[in-house]
Image (tube, rainbow, N blue to C red; front, side, top):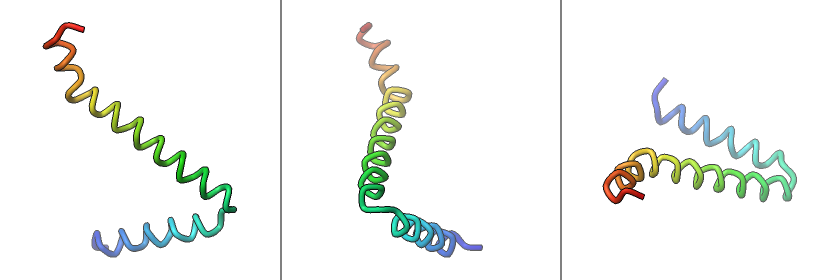
Length: 59
């Protein structure tokens, strides 16, 4: 199975899941997803760059 086909299947599954939620559930899902991505991005940033800045500046 190719990547493009699998990505289309995943996108369609996500659309169906969001359609099955109530409007309040969709809002909560979007907020939770964005919050999770923000926290993950901050942890990744600290893991890669932040540690070197801590060592460099001695915080």
